[in-house]
Image (cartoon, rainbow, N blue to C red; front, side, top):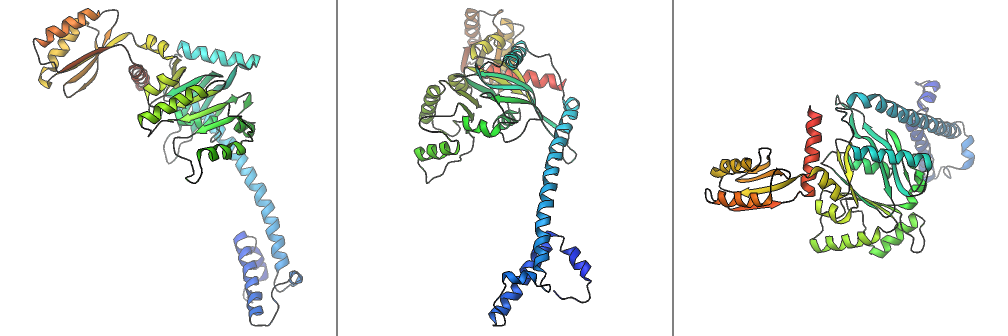
Length: 405
């Protein structure tokens, strides 16, 4: 390192960079190691720290000071960026919200329950979401994205709650906030009375998570997995998580395994809270005590399956399959039953219509089908009550159409 053409001050300035200082340390070590190998010296010793020609003492002092300074700087930057993200999200919240529809009565009632809980702090609810919002800032010229908009929920112990929604509705962001993978832009949530913003380390001890992707080790048995995660959460004996989050838990399972899983989950929800996201309407009906439908980050409705069907399913679903050339004749027959019939599906000769229950009698539908068979080749037909899938499609489509307007 003796370089007469470079002033010592410039070498010292370069040593202020951690990478160069570390390189200088390795360089001095290599010189001593080379001398030891050829027999000129015993190598680097502690007393060599005072050797001015190597500069090891100064280098170590520089690296310790740099470590402390960079630690403080990193902490300040992290705090500042967190505050900046929250402020940015709050300022963008109003500007990026595409629509602000009148809140549904069931969603408004859920918000009232949350506010009452926060005032009284009773222990009847296991999970409380208080006006949670999540906004991802815009990048590369793209606008900011509101993934979750003002979500309020009150979930009781012993309840299985299902969150439904199309892709990109905000379900994953909702789960990620509750399990601590990302922080809300505003609002908060309480899990077993603990605030996820300030007590997340304690929340983990009462929380279980079943992600969509497989996180198991092939070398461990099922029992060993339970023991391992139980020790991580400091659970002892037969203690189990009080709140369990599941992201599409039955994806990829065969029918027999799926049914077995559902049976286990129905037994497991006693005295604990289950929260799951799923695209399977059958799974939602089998497992969930209540359902919420999330569209564009906003909760559109909430209730049990009977309530949702009664609220949004004021129609029968009539399906008919004929040759494509006879589709118009089918549509004319349906409109004769009800002028307010609504076609919801149409492909390759198969049509699906919604028939208002207050305008159509089931006997009239059967008679119309018999008359239709005398005119065209009816290959298949069916009349069913509203399904949960029909409710989901209607709610999602209505919210999207309102957003477009």
